[in-house]
Length: 562
Image (tube, rainbow, N blue to C red; front, side):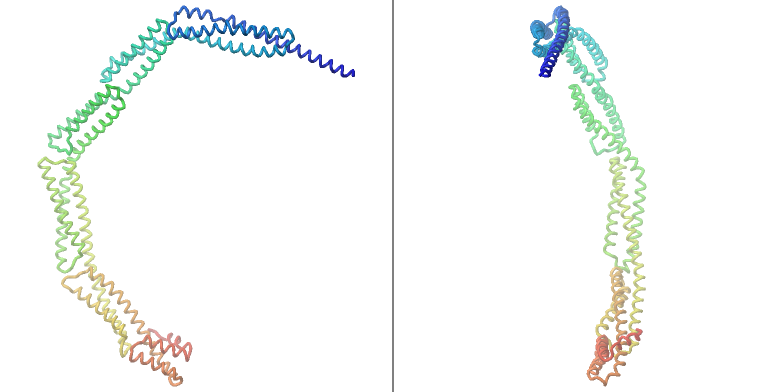
């Protein structure tokens, strides 16, 4: 029980100590807030208000001043008074040991004081801005006046650099001068805020004119100096060339006139400060002038090349004609003995026609040069085309000549080949004769005489009045293949004859031992002696022998040396 009482006493003492501590803390906070409000009351803005009233503000500046002053009065007369009341109430509660209520009130007071201080700071800043606006405007105005005078002097003294744009620039400068006058009037009246807006407009317009001058000067330099100088040079060179009887595909005078019209158009657009249009026009003018220079240069260089190439082209043309005529003589001589390919004669005749056309074109150009009525660039192109034709003809006729040489070489080869074929055919004939056969198979005889006829036909064609080597060359290949086949047929026939003879001879030992075998032997002999079918004779007798003596046929085959 005693411990409980002691515990209660301790708790009470702790509570009383906390209440005392909180009271002291609230008192400290109150003292700080009092110091802060005292400082804010002493930092009055009355002196600034007095100075601004002496400035006799007007317009937007006066409206701004009145707004700030009203806001200040409201803060001092109402807001600050309310804060002081709240502070006194919090102090009273703290004295009465209502420390929690006092602490809560002090929090509200602290927030109100901070808001009051912020508002007073904003109003003070507004007053300072108004006080500084007059001096700031004066400084700014003086700087802009200097910039304006410098820019105006530049435009007036260097108007030759800006050409038709000068009038527009002077109008813009006049507009700036008017803005500066209005700014001065507003300043004199005390409307510093409105005056500063005019100064901002002046600054913007001065910057714009400065940028325009940087653009105008190079554009007008091209229009006033570069382009006219180039046009005059083109005129001078053109007139000089005309006196030298140069001809042109295009109407140079008309093109020069169009360039001059476009220069005038660009000047007009520059006067309106239409920089994009002027820039586009100037680029087009540059291209037109470059094209004119190129046209004149083309003809000047064309004449040099034409005069330089006139004789070499003629020499090349005469050489081509000489070569063509020499080839023509050879062809005419060969046509007496040979039938030439249609492609060869067509190509040769086409070359003859091309040479005539080239000659006519060259003569026309040379006559035009003599008459001083040619466009040299076109003649130069004609000469290049002529040389190209002559190159093609030279290559073509070299190919024709090579083909003729090849034809003569093919004839020699063909004659040698046919002689060789005839010898090989004779060998095949003797090989068959050595077999001393009663007859030969019809298919072999047909093939033999076919090859024989082919060889004779080749002899006839080679001995003809006009030899067609194209056909002969094809037939030589066919005959060679047929002869090779005949050689194989002869070899096979000889082998079967020798084999059948040995098989029949060997089979005699079984002639009277087996009636069935005897029948096959008689049949095989008939195929050999009467039908001359040696292949089937071998087949029949081989089958019969194998039936009576297996392996005998293979042993006999090994003895054959065909």
